[in-house]
Image 1 (cartoon, rainbow, N blue to C red):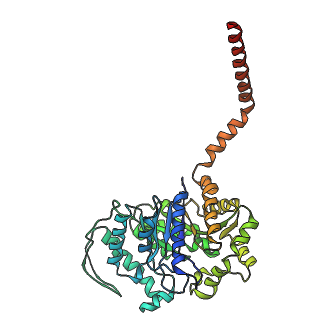
Image 2 (image 1 turned 90 degrees about the vertical axis):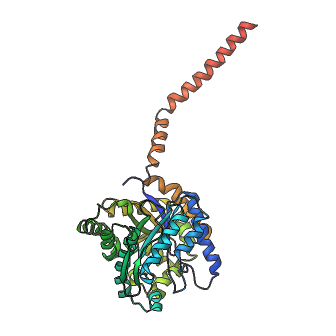
Image 3 (image 1 turned 180 degrees about the horizontal axis):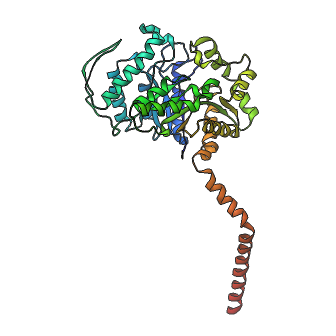
Length: 390
């Protein structure tokens, strides 16, 4: 792999009870901040219950964010397509692709919160079965096909899109994966990218990281898809970075307990099990289990490199999970430190300036003497000119 892209995966996570209007504004401000820092991507979640992940429509959020940004690509991370009519999912994304002039990406999944699907009479088995059915319909519609099909929740009769995507031939699609091979299998079958969420958030997922991509390649070959491009593989990871390790530890005291409490006691999402009953235990869990980095830019570099090595061939993008462990100012500073010091290590930008500095260091003594010689030469020349005119 050459240039590793960086981005955020913004569920988002906000403490229940706070002003939701201001929380959503913070999310928009963060995406604008990342755009200014040169981040490549922002993926926005869809959730409808449990009180912390409060964006109900990633498409609406993306439309708002697109008007506030210039270059960052904006993806649904993810659209829970099992909840929706697949025709309208495809149609809305085509519209968004036009409105953003090609900065749209569609990430899909079954929906992570059982409290969401229960409200529409579906259980987690239903949503996982519908995911593959609806993704098949969406990809066919985006290819320009007319679809007639009865699903468990919808009836499509001669369904087709009236607009082609702005992106030629289509905007990028990606399937979410936690730890099981379900997501990689579908990514291979449908020729989409892969969002490995749990692969960096759970120890089991980390151990299975390289296996994720091998499943994508095997299924792609089985279904006659082109060889998958690792540029479409994105890993979601946990980080909070400050100028010192001690400062980073102090800053996450702001909100890390609430985040852990959400996965330990609120969200019925056992694939994202986390350990720790005190702030110290929580920090140690993130750092020692190898699933994230709370510390300095050196810790961040080491974590990304470890994931590159574990992937056994590299991946396309490192997405930092938005978690609000720290206050808004410290959170933005963390993203800034990563952009300033971590990006260059994985985007072929660090070596050139270091080599230039090394060359200048090696030849400094000789060049410094030549500067002094030049000054001495011009001084003597002036004295000679002055003597000749006096």
